[in-house]
Image (cartoon, rainbow, N blue to C red; front, side, top):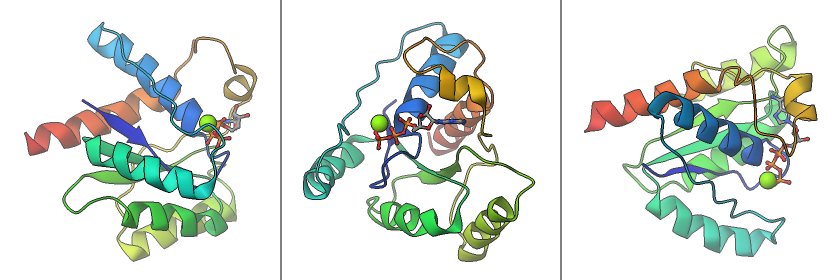
Length: 156
Ligand SMILES: Nc1ncnc2c1ncn2[C@@H]1O[C@H](COP(=O)(O)OP(=O)(O)OP(=O)(O)O)[C@@H](O)[C@H]1O
Ligand SMILES: [Mg+2]
């Protein structure tokens, strides 16, 4: 199963989500997952070329976005770049569920009919501080993985 985590916007927890999803996968299936981070601060055009290739190979595309409605434009642009028929969904990360920004983001996604994960990854100090360490607490990421597995199973 190839899961691509894509968004042209920087700093939206792509790398974090890749590491945590891989850890969740390893725990659930007791086998390793390989993480390829194909987004080393590249220029936008290079990103597009690479993204097109890696999105083509993906079985599922995760599009992380912050809980700010402003960031949604980039998330939608990324969702629109997913080839027809390939499953993908927006994942709200670093969320603060009680804020207006969060609620507006959810409402905008739902009004647009954009597929999104039910699971939302909340803002957490240990995720922020854990850079470079193997994650201990996986927070909502096992649930995110569960939704991906379920979506893949439904298609199989
Ligand atoms: N749930 C969270 N709570 C708090 N901080 C988070 C969370 N997820 C990610 N972060 C922090 O946000 C920052 C950006 O995350 P990350 O590096 O994963 O983003 P990225 O999309 O890979 O960025 P880039 O575009 O630079 O590659 C990091 O400091 C990370 O620790
Ligand atoms: Mg990154």
